[in-house]
Length: 443
Image (cartoon, rainbow, N blue to C red; front, side, top):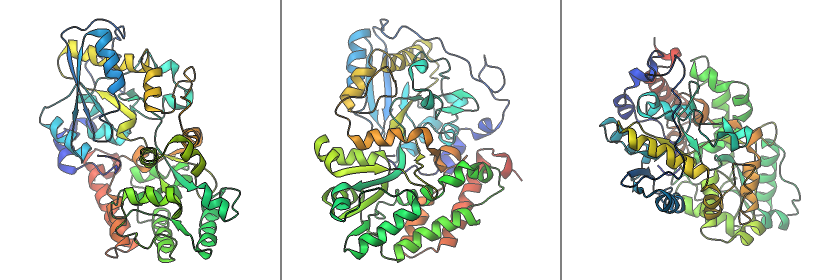
């Protein structure tokens, strides 16, 4: 599903066999406990005449492999079909897999919770010892895609980061020469801009899914200090001070009038238009937001108008949140020839085709030996540069992803208090964590 990173649907998750997921004794046939078997990696350009592969993609990722597929088909003789799974993507994929319907490859959010949700140990091919790993930047190699020490996802693009996109011209017009150094400074800057008649922040509660970023960036320091490990084991709850205070702060800033007046109904496209036009000064968002801007403005315009800085309570620390457009998984289909061909396509993608892929997509290179294309806007380069110091989001570090964003949207619309947001989120988290076999929730 585009970028909403919603909770694992309980029924679908259970249908995927979470009993097996939660049992540490369930392993691949060839692997010792706690690991997954290493696959054999074919020559990326070996002939595959007569082989047909299927890739499942979301509506916002179905064009991503176009250039790679064209080259792979020409080099190998294989046929590759991209099938678009309608939104909500994750739930659609889980439902299909639960009924035994599997593609050869699929775009998938490479976090531990979402790999658990799709029962990676039973359904996915391990990608240990993938031939391109040595080419990845060391600080990105193991940032995501792993579950219980085994690799199940191939990172193909730079993981999304929660941070602040800002309009450079609005800052300049208001004599702002430096970006905020922490969350508190950002709020004070927002108040200064409001006093000058500028809308400081723009939120899109009409589409709901981005509301959670404002809470999560406030939790960056706590996440670095083990917040999600404590939540995962039941030692800390959404209702406790750390998370509840972040929710309360978000509401207080809205109540103070630091956001757009149409916050309840504004949508994703409104947010992009507002920032690009200068109607608003700042937006807390992730990489897909910038993709929207790229669809409406060229690189020169974006470099002139749009900047990025990471933010946290203590400084400029980003919160990374890989999404389904960042990675691919290869399924166990029971057809050894197709499984090998799927691994070959990944090896081709991240090997011989990688330079053409990032040039075609104008995206940041994950491989130091392959320079990023000249057409990549500076803001995206700055997002990528924030990754080494970034901390994992709820989606990256928690064992389950409750519908925090829906509850926050209800709060914005006046039907939930911060306390009720926290309680509802904790209740759902506990249910999902129990279904996933999390040790702290089995009583």
